[in-house]
Image (cartoon, rainbow over all chains, first blue to last red; front, side):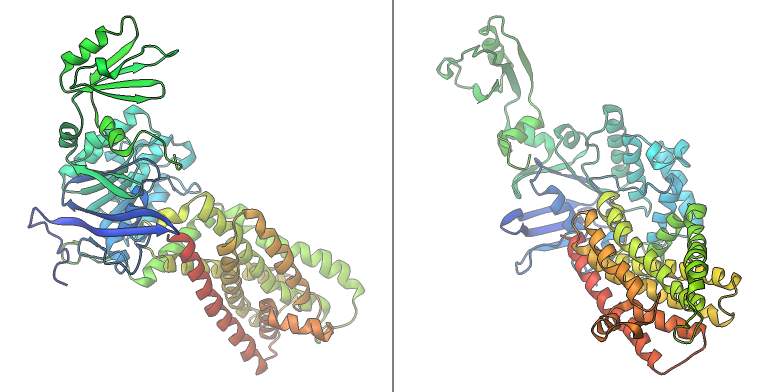
Length: 321
Length: 263
């Protein structure tokens, strides 16, 4: 069994996830196409993409909930295990937070977690201790006897995260952890994920929020239509793929009219229905453009990962969005 | 702890038990509303049909007074109904609405473990429902102890048998209303034509063949023979039918549901 994880991280560059040339098709649709990436132990890796990009499918293949296309030479290696053969070992070492909160409505908070701890074979006393610690960690201690339906969406989400942490996982897999939650809860969850990473937990997360990726990911893979578009550290992605500043102007009744020929050469214009976006590395140039707009309202800001994302994946909605 | 043995996930029996345990805990959470009807239903049935209608039936059936003939049949129909409902509506709701299985499959549980655990749970419910009927029959002095004590075990087998079949049906169903076809078109007729209400031998020969093919007939024959201590060699055939049915249909159900739960 050489090559398999021995429970330690002697080699700090150890790769927890190694995905090589993986494809997954549903009929003729290629949900994941020849995708490769590696996740280093103790880091947070983000899969980013619009709805239908193949993020969830890729994630499900990691823990054996989805099967990769057969007859190709792609491989998936999680702690040295192949999900096609060693699903149980991978799931024992990992915690999964699925896209939907699938808590047992018929049970209360503590019952949900106690029953789930049985799936890992945790003795009841140890399970109870862990549950109390985890509810404290996710700021849910007061809700220990609450019914699931009495919990807000943010509380349910935190409870699903607590459930995923029951077996003290070395790899935490989260599918859109903060979609639909209010800003306070999102920041709380990001804070907890950063704490877990600091303790050595490897994190794989899917999201379509750029700010989320920027907040928690050490490395980001932008995917679109099942393929890798870009992959790098989020700050470098920003520095190398997009101009530093953006000037956004909303077009109303055809005004303002801008002729590209009139713009300085270093200013790039992106036209979409209703909005003009001017990109430039130098903010002064954009100020000059803004001065020429007369009284028309505008918004001048630093560019974000969202701009990289839109540039990389295209601004037009695909049929799944 | 784990560093010495990183793959110490629970062994098969523990995994099956944990699935069973989840269902048991959810069921016993509403002990009164879940636990009382299994006792009330046979009482109503025996009062209404057995004593009411039965008074006009003077003939014995298969050599038994009518109330005893009917009562022994109810031992397994109770198991049939509870298992059929559990593994159609119950399973479908867990699968499509509550997404309970999505949660369970994120833990070290395989689809096989999940489905087999579900079948074992339905068998357990069959055991309990047969036991409830047994209590009522004993109180009404319709059957004798200790012979009747074997009935819940036939209830367990009946529960498993209908679990496998119902799960197979569920694996095909797209909307919850489709179960009406199965329950009204298949389960209910079985109640009337499998030797529960009147003997199979009084059916016309062509219908009798059908009665021999469907599962309930064999469970009824087995439980009635055990409760009345009328052992025959042919009972081995009924037992074999039940065993083969559980294994074959169970394997099909596992396979179909795996296709539905794993992309």
